[in-house]
Length: 518
Image 1 (cartoon, rainbow, N blue to C red):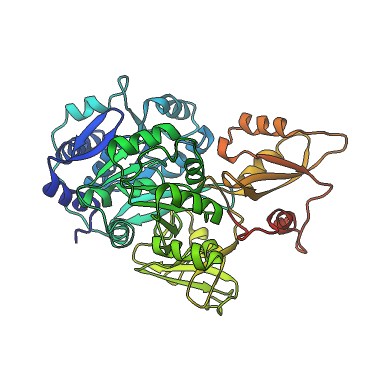
Image 2 (image 1 turned 30 degrees about the horizontal axis):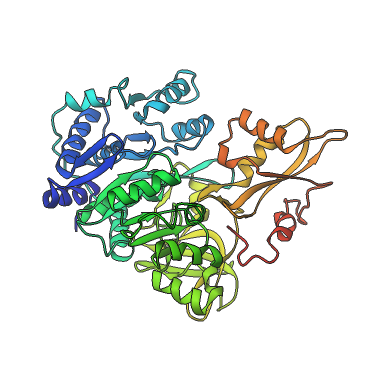
């Protein structure tokens, strides 16, 4: 198997050259067209001075160019970086300062923001290549010759994949070329083993997250990747019918919204063969409705940005059916360990705990990232003797099903996106009327978990939810991270050593819930 990312993609081009590969609102690219444009972009990046090991960052909504940038960066031995289109300018600046990229490729709606960050001195200088009519992306491709890839080792860096950290800052998980190719292998062997030239994968979630990782495995067997730049339920059903979509990955909140949409039972979704989801389990009542609409095609996985990006544990479609009919308690689990990974539930000493006991999830495998970029202390804490510590507390039953029971790092997953309390707390604490604050995740019917702020106020002060949300917006906090509810308390509870005791605030909200995280 090819061990460089662009070699893996190139093997598909040789097989399926004239077939459609990428589809977005602007048009369709065949495999050969995608490859030719990628090679020209690689030459253009080299012409802009990008060398092996330099970082190239992309920021755009879902569109075909995302895949071209991935290919081109791999060809020249540069290192790929990703910005989340749903983040704010403050978060863009943090990642740009961390990566110090040579080039940023930005969609037309983001070009001005990135240039503004750089020109204001909030991020180091970088060449901004803009998409669209006013950008120079197409001009650079048109004026460049196809690049002939140079050989280099599969132990060179390919990607720095940023995820939020418990301190409120992002952390970049470093992947080598061979790791990323192994991720593709894992996906093909487990998630997409039924994909073929008649398949079409719909990208609803952002390509900067899990959905983008599925593009190359789809291409490997001749399938099409169809891009949705923004989610809309009616547009979703339209594209499923028009493109005969077979596979997709959706956040549980989106599955819930689609299953209960007025058009759900009148639209033709018979082409669908598999819907992947992760981030939180689906309530049995929601799953029943979703299976009535879409069929018994749901595939759950649990993983992390650092631990191989997709799924370290899996619950297959047939297991969903069996659990729904015979073991409803199992729907709260995240399945059993996936092939190619070792998974253990460890105590504080790093040894496996017994069945039914609570421990921390650790994973190991040849697709796990190697370190955090520029953060040796965080690396030393999380990467231990070849294992990555996931930071989630879990149990295992006697049949091997794993259930997440809490998070060591208190991360909130709202609508499939990670929110860390400390980051939100830092913003809220800056409000002049706030004395102390603790942020927790509480159950939410639509988003799985919602951000909930517990605050103690200064004497004589008052604060409404609307005022707090406006403060968060004014502070540049991303919309999905702002609190959806506010609770005023006399005092924030603390542990014996003076740390915020979030569980004391959180427990009452999760009473009667099958799972204490979203």
